[in-house]
Length: 303
Image 1 (cartoon, rainbow, N blue to C red):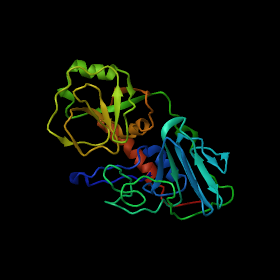
Image 2 (tube, rainbow, N blue to C red):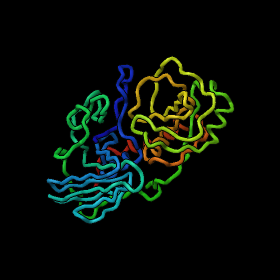
Image 3 (cartoon, helix red, strand yellow):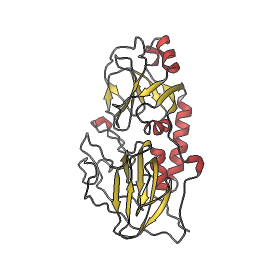
């Protein structure tokens, strides 16, 4: 489906933010081509994707390992490439991670709804036709074809190419309801090793494991955002993701750092998740650094 940085400023109308689930991988896919950080690109869930080029052009790939092939030949992930007229780009089922990103020069042309072209299936907004429909066979993606100078290929530095494994640690900022949870329940939360449940999606990642004891009861509904850790009566936490609702009444133990949500967006069913206590200042600082890094590189420079 088509995604960008999402819709901000419309939550009071019940319109969710949406946008790319993994801003690290999507950010690199756009940066490899010199695109603006909010350029529209393709988010591919689990692979099984193909597209044919009508014109010679650059493109870039990042994120989940989907064994990209160009005209039948394997090509590297986390890198830009060049396609010739008639070239066929294919992705297999993901072997690691969940979401791969495919970017084109200048971004894909798509109508803007509330300032964004991000696909929100549940809300019927965004995407290629503006009605929230995912991409389907026969769809035509329009962008500005560009062929880089001979030999110019960009690669993400090795230290920023993520390897999606079977365990992760996520940092948490305590919420305004943190103190409503019994101390023993909080201690259990940070000491536990949860597993990602198969029922997880872009709305929320459900966790399995030993339920937290005596969570607070449901509260008056209030605004929620991605990263919020809701704890329903079952005692099993739910981490809200990009397509989450705008209000909710489950008590919230905390919020996962926004930069750490990129890792969770790539977590397959069964991946082990542990939490550690962080603080709001560190969370804001790391998010600011990430945004500055991807937003400052807006002009194409193919020299």
